[in-house]
Length: 113
Image (cartoon, rainbow, N blue to C red; front, top):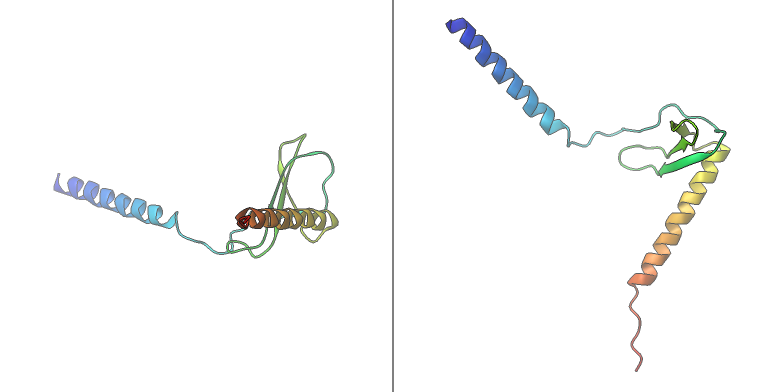
């Protein structure tokens, strides 16, 4: 009876330690986590969604993910291909435009006197 109790106590303690370790590791930064590993040069057909993630702390390459309208499947587009370069230019243009707009809003209007 004593060995059964010891076994359950040891198993419970092991499970507690495992859960504690997993809980701590979920919020930690893990470098090199990219969403796209297999990319395509081009895609054909209408797109329903587009996500462009510029290289940063978590991934050292630009990532372009498009969702195909017919299949609803996400497809990674190669950022060095013609379509990828075009989508990156559009994203960078949009970011510059947003930056200019936020600077205009942040600039105080001089008082008329």
